[in-house]
Amino acid sequence: MRFTPRIPGRARKTPAAGARGAGAREAGGGFGRLAVALRTPARPGEPLLARAPRRWQRLAPYAVTAVFVVVLLPVTIAVLTNDYRMGGGWAGALGVAQTVPLLLAVTRPVPAWAAVLAADVAGAVLLLFTDGVVGRSWPWPPMGVVGYLVLMACLGLRESVRTLVGVWLATGAVGVVLGFFAPDGVTNTVAVQFVLGGVVLALTWALRGLGDARQRIAEQESISGAERARRTLLEERARIARELHDVVAHHMSVITVQADSAPYRLPGMEEPVREEFAAIAASARESLGEMRRLLTVLRGDGTDGGEGAAGGERAPQPGVARIQQLVEATVRAGQPVELSLAVGVADAARSVPAVDLSAYRIVQEALANVVRHAPGARTSVSVSGSAGDGEVLVLVVNGPARDAVTALEGEGTGHGLVGMRERVRLTGGTLDAGPLPEGGFRVAARLPLDSRTEESS
Image 1 (tube, rainbow, N blue to C red):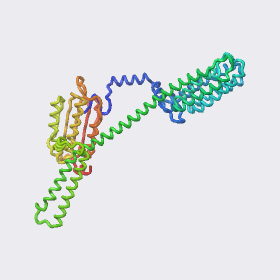
Image 2: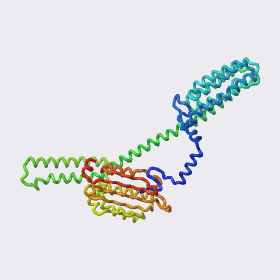
Image 3: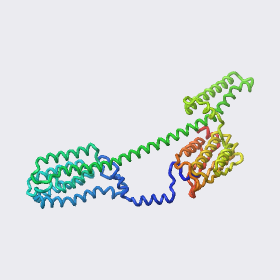
Image 4: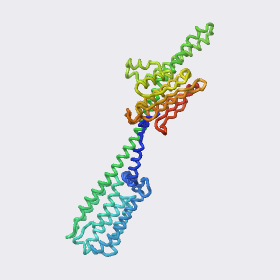
């Protein structure tokens, strides 16, 4: 049987939709996954993009920082030497100190920031004693500003808000202090670096925050899904327990009546035997009382107290003999259903009440799912088996929904399959449910008639 156009619990994808999805994934390519990796928070000490799915994505941060180092190092040395007229030795040392720590920013951005800030401060002090500082940017040369922004991007993708604000304010404070010693005729770049650094930190932190939020949503959805599945299972077990109460209560009532009436049906019974039968009857009545108290909890009778609800619970439990009525009602509702009911299967199933009830409920749930998810689909119901076979076989198969009919429910919850599995497990049988290759859905249940299986369950 097929709950088309949706498989229970999952959205059904048409071939066209699958092709569009594949095309979209192909179009996004690795860059889409790279964006996801950028939004994924890194653990302490973990490199940027360490959890990216592809190797080249994990190596990308190292490659980017290496490119900046290779470009900024010679440019920094050249600018300090030619424009600021700094000695070659000092220019080379400052160039290395201001750019090489960027490689450390991939895994340790805060120590990298401390090293670069110390080198920038040392460079600003040394520039005070050069002849070319007049008319130039000070205390942060253009190359220093670019390297600082790269460092801020690495920080924003890794560190907490408190750390980012502290780094930003500390850099601004150092710039303000250096501003008091600014020589005449220079272009002060403290405000430029402070503003640009704050913008980069805000953007990268927002990107990381988006990843944090999505990760929390995914975790909550996973927890909610598990809770829904657990609640569904418990509700289904409680419903089955309520229905089986009638079956077990019937047997216990028969035991009580037989034990109470034994002295009258079998005259001349010795006193110890009479006492034994009386004890059996008392135990049976006590068991019935315990079952009724348990059933009160399961049904919540203490909260409702409605007579109408209680009256509905007193209705006889259905079985295989009523499957024909169920199918006829479904046909009257406009669903084409064909029934094949083997001769003698109703009597065989009635010998084991749990099997009798479970077979009916499986067919009922399967037909309900066809009506909800595949209205108009041709459906066949087959119930076979006998006492000689030792089992009852239930088979419900439906084809695809008619195109002109809209499904009543677009998404399945999977509750029906959960209930079927619980009922089959109760009787010690097996269940096979799933979509068919040519379209449609199939539910096949095997319910053993061995009374020992029912008792052990």
